[in-house]
Image (cartoon, rainbow, N blue to C red; front, side):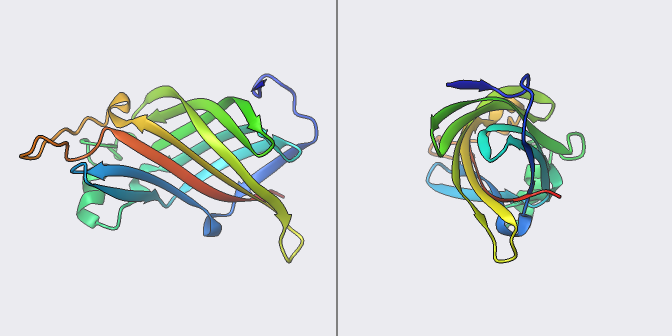
Length: 187
């Protein structure tokens, strides 16, 4: 069932905040088409509202600072921030805004929305799993949510293109984006 979440009034609205000390936002790309390199964004934030605890009703606006990219290699991080990839100076953030959702089952759904990178906005679908909602030892309500999607980086203007001597791409066009967020009910 498709849920239009932006044109629907939310009753019993719950606002959630990301607990960054228990959350990750990663991307993965093939290098030389033989290994996978993982990167993270260290600085990100989101405004998340749900109808009660129903995450398939979530209204999400998410942004990440491109300059916070970290792959564990300073030279590669600098290259990713350059105009060959993100161009952090001109396009300092990437963002996602949800539009609606399609429920798969009680704990999984597909979140539809728009991803913007380098001022290019395209629709993407996030495969989302709600891993549970619990109270922590201090009585705070916490939720665990994981998501994943795959994009073609060139669709967003990340056009760096180099082949090795065997004709393999240095960096894959397909990029996997994965996140594991622990959320807290916002005060």
